[in-house]
Every structure is written in C-alpha cells, then in structure tokens.
Length: 296
Image (cartoon, rainbow, N blue to C red; front, side):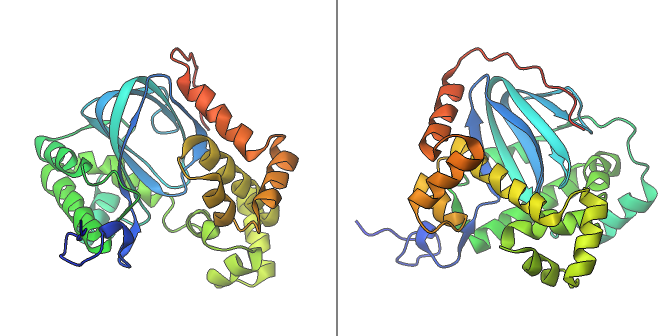
C-alpha cells in the first residue's frame, strides 16, 4: 500500500527531505522514573497531562508538578525530575522564543517585576485542547518542517492570548537570563561542532580569546568541558533513549563499533550493551525511593 505525506507527496513524512527533528514531543514515564540532575542545553517547557512529577531546580526547588500544570526550564539551568505517579506529558524544546510577540516580550522584560517565587502555571482549556489534539502525531522523532513551524506559532499564540503578563513573566524572565550570554552561545552550539577551533570560529572569536572567556565563565578548560559533555550525552542516550547502539556510535563520530566499545570501557568501565542493560534494570524497578537534593 502506497504511503503518502500530509501534503499529498508520495513519500511518508518521516522520510521527506523537509522532515526535521521534532521539538514538541509527547512522552510517558512510569512511577519511579528518575531523570538525573542535568543542565538544559535547550529551553524546555513541560506540560503535564497526567500523573505527578517532583521537580528540583533553582526556580522550582522541591516542587510537585500536578496534572494540568506546566513549567519552563531555561537553557543553562539545572534540573532533576522524579516521576511520583505514572505520567504523560508534552515537552517543547526551543532555543529562541521566535514566534512570541517581540513587543510584548520586551514589555514584560522591562515593565513586569520578576516573580519572587516561581510556581507552575495552570494549563488553560485552550492550551489543553492544543496539547491533546497534537500528541497523537507529535510522538514521532521527525516531523514536517512546515507543520512544526505552524505548531510553534499556534502554541505561542495560545500563550499570548490566554495568559496574563504576570503569568508570562514566569517564562520570559528565566529565558532572558541566558539568551544574550556567552554561556548561552556555548550551550546552544557545542553539539554542532567537533573541535574547540570550530566552536570559537562559529562565535567569531580567536581561539585565544575564546579559551580565556570560556575559562572565566565555566571555570575549566574548554576541551575538558566538551569531552565531559560528550561523555554525558553518550551515557544519557544509551540509558534513556531508544536509539540503537550503532546509531549512537556513528552520531558521535566513532569509526566503528569496536572503537566505540573501547571508548565506553575506558571511560565508564562498561560496554555500551552493559550501560544499556543498566537502564532496563533501573526502569523496571517499581518502587524507587529517591530524594532529590537541591540542584544548584
């Protein structure tokens, strides 16, 4: 049977040249699932449709997120999540709030006082309809570029139309903390390059200037930091994603599976398969008791 795309082309959306990585993703996790403390490399909005989550971050220290609520964790912020009750959520990943009204964004930044205490926002009926209607076709890894652009704009419109300036200050002020910073540039772009020289060139810096600024901001050499991020990403993908070991191997530039296996054994003390099996054992435990310490 011939498969057609949503636009009528004789190819599925997943294989279309216009398909891009999905940024609005539906996910479900069982009670006890634990997302270890990590820094956001993108802005992420978490819309909880069912269940309960314990969120621990600078903005939401020890906060229980209930079904029908949502939060934003800004790029560069550190957060940790424990699923308290079987959860379903929609997560929106983005770098810049490009679809949001620029004039209103600036007004909130300059005229609306940042909240003293951050708290989850309620999912309005209009937003709930958007999330429920979208989740059926937002579960795939890839999506049509035009459709994703449209859904971004629709989400921005709903937030702008049905939430007050004070409500939106919960989102805008954390975003502004990083978007003009050197740290933001590094977090946004380090995964796109393979070398320190490429990252410095991308930002328009000489290698000497880039290393100096990096050391003052991150307090460690840039090469060492990039290697740590690479290792963290590899472990995360092995333990918490469904990507095959081969896909992860070649995504991170290894020439062969034996080369990748040797790297894992040297740096983590386990083979890629053992690291993946650790994820399966961890996720199968029904009663995991985890106390989330403060994520600084």
